[in-house]
Length: 107
Image 1 (cartoon, rainbow, N blue to C red):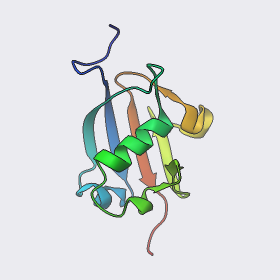
Image 2 (image 1 turned 45 degrees about the vertical axis):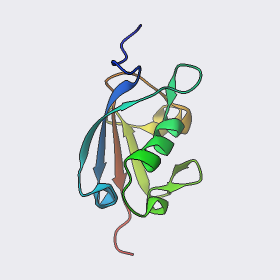
Image 3 (image 1 turned 90 degrees about the horizontal axis):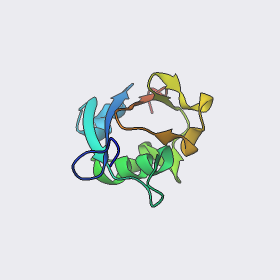
Image 4 (image 1 turned 180 degrees about the vertical axis):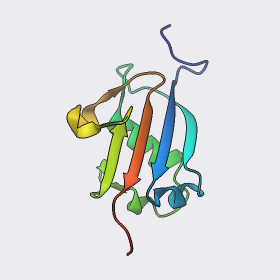
């Protein structure tokens, strides 16, 4: 059954920084299990929606815009900029670490 967890989800580490953690109860690091898409893979765009629906505690519009993150949020997959991968279409693997860092300050 591959490397997925008991519930069939992928075990991921989610990190928030740059003030984004304030939308997630002030917690910077989250260990989560996320179910894959219909095709049995988990893409970043699905993860972003899942985070918005399941983890975000306030002002989700500060995290997402449409089906992706707001401009000004740096996304790293295993410490590499997701723009170097497939962006929102990037396929995640079990055990990946995904970081969301706000580069916008003030407001």
